[in-house]
Image (cartoon, rainbow, N blue to C red):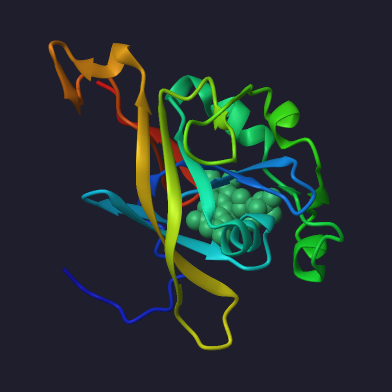
Length: 192
Ligand SMILES: Cc1cc2nc3c(=O)[nH]c(=O)nc-3n(C[C@H](O)[C@H](O)[C@H](O)COP(=O)(O)O)c2cc1C
């Protein structure tokens, strides 16, 4: 091996795609794709830019739903690309071609389902829907960066029966379902 010292553009090795639903200031639902997420026990850490509606909604409302799509929903996730629930669109996002979209569920062609314990709705078509509350907001990375890591605690899990281990409903069966993985800008299907 010959290792070079370089400045990689990104370290997006691979993390699951999550569609976060949250409530906008006017009470309408927002839905946004993200992938900087990891879990331990009942908690999840979310890496989010504050130049997006989702981070602001989570810091204000303290609630969200983490919806994990199946591979078949890749096109629905793609439909949300280049959209934001922020109006006006932040300058840095205008430069990237983002547009304001108030109807994220309609744009994604996904359906809202009421949650049990939090106000933001679930995305009905996603087999994993985790209702969660915000526990802590941490600064992340460069002090000037617009990124926060938001720690949430799952308060209710809705899992499609079809992906559970038969007769052992406390486990998701990895042979029946795996999340979409976003790695270096592309979606990967881990399903066997
Ligand atoms: C596959 C995918 C993964 C993304 N991962 C993240 C992420 O981990 N953190 C983040 O802040 N934005 C991420 N984004 C960008 C957000 O979706 C984008 O900022 C969007 O404007 C958020 O919508 P909102 O402004 O309505 O919250 C990702 C986008 C896509 C398509």
